[in-house]
Image 1: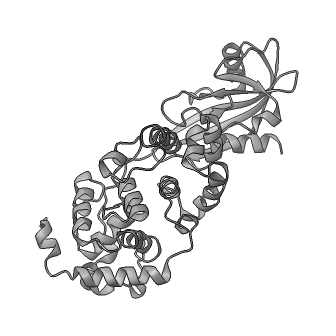
Image 2: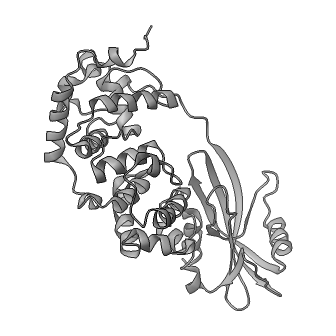
Length: 364
């Protein structure tokens, strides 16, 4: 039976200063050349940390460059309209991240004269800012010794300290934050936190950690016990739900395309998409879909033809979309959430990746 340890037992016999030196020395020599590491601008670091949540570094780099070109300062982002911001984020996914970031920088501009707060209490109260983002931005930008514990860091520390607690639990993350508060370098918290993240990304990877290359192998209890591949412990997530949808790229007699805006709350909020509905498994014919589109948008839909099948995986569900192309005749009305746009205008609206793929297939 594995006994839960308290902080004193976890740190007993652990050489904190030597661990700090080994970790920071390695990071100083081996850190990747990443664009948000060029300076300590808290705005750039904040944007990069939001982008990096649940997204790979290689994917983020070109988005970061593009975003910084469009919104080089916190003020520029705060003053931009949401449509422009969503378009710049298009393809990165998890759009609530950028909506929260947009709201938060507006608050910083209004309440703190455009300067990202150094205070943990102030910064952590901004929209979308959790304990990890707080620790990352304050430590990297301002040198404040605050923990920045994400999945990578929990994996590293669970192995180093031989901790068998489930990392999916909030209580376990808080335990790791408490550990970091005791072992973080006061002289260089920026490099310490970044080094833990870098170690998890490059060396202490999930399936087959590269222990022979690890700069802190001498401190790793899991390695010495030969159980590094068994850690961390994480409960399995629930099975993803599969949702079947029908969508249509509908063109009217003027050559305009019908798009609609998603609700302001929930999945992919405020993004634009082609008209679609959830497909009852027992009804697959295109005619029923054409009738629904006709009623919904006050047009007569003609000649629906299949474009293809498209699948998009979210963290909790999978969309399976059957897409069509169609012609519409009759009066084409518009509203705040429904527009007829030219193909050129369509390129200025932010769409989910699945609908970008439908549009690409439509044009092939």
